[in-house]
Image (cartoon, rainbow, N blue to C red; front, side, top):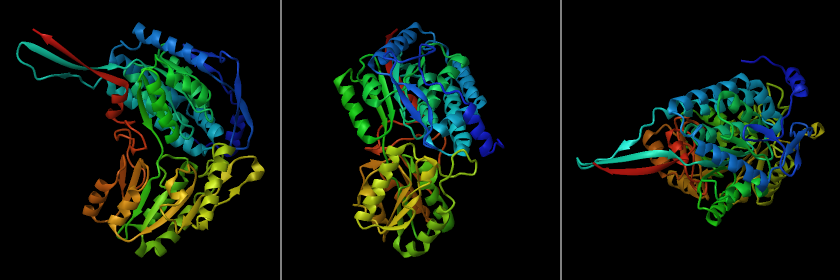
Length: 497
């Protein structure tokens, strides 16, 4: 556990070397066009550095190298146990460079340094090592055949994987993809968000240091409409994996159809219901969880508990507990280890969140706490955690993903009504249920159309639990052994003896 102070982190930030170039075939390189974009810190608006703005020419170069490396077998045909050892070394290097990576993450996207150091970096390293550990323990199958035939069912790496990852958990979301994609022997082209590219760029060198051959992991920073589109349309990219907005997820499906029908796996938006019944076993615990579910990571979480459904008979008792619990979530300088809420990722996102808050006012919801931009004097992008009461599920703030710390409180009278409201959304990523009645917990969980349902907690699970959504929250799963399905093809080989 580090004992670094805000002053220590600020001093390290001044000395931090920022690498902004792309990483192709084992080397850092400028974009072919030499174009760059400015990387600004949401902490205080400072210029962190200039980052390569890759486009189709860089995508072409990276795909050619990734394909050649895959076909060479240097990684793809390496024994699983040997790939496992390299992946574990890769994870170890992330831990070894934890403070540097945490600082890059915090400066780049504004999350509190304590979260970057204690959640994001360890979570990323665990995703790499867990996937690596699993790869030599996954067996293929022998079909039930007549005595004179042999039927083999084997999994093979898909080939070249394009991975487009979001800005809210830049390192961890990248490693959720890299863990299974690399462990199964694929070559990967990682496209980080232009809002937070720095950790992805940095770990590319650590991958080579760990022993991953040049060309297996390439990183292309840049914009979605340039290099992201180029990867999505490229006929030699076999699989595209994505975490981000539902709008972009739909566009990627179109690009697949317009190109080579590449497999497309999507983890998209959410508008997750957090349902608190009157018989919840501990209302104080539920209130603390409700506050955390909307304020953690500045509310920039796809599974944020942005709709709080409360049984009407306890709402007047429960809501004050949530308001009190939210006092622990106060925006501050992300480099201060005591800060719980940092800055929103950039000015554009801050203005989006503020516009939703204005929409809540306009549609007649009652603001009960927060709702303002603060700390303007810092040059950073900070918004108070916000609660609206008296929300109808038809309101914009209840239907659309805000991706900020804005909570909509909705009352209900019966379990059936709660389930109807919870499912009345285009999304289906996550949900939570608070009740002491085991039958009610099970029946409600079964009725909820969501990929993850948590009972008497919010945001449970670990690497062993699959993560993904129903409906317009996407398809496929990250984490768990199910994640390997996205990066492998099934082959049937039938042999007559």
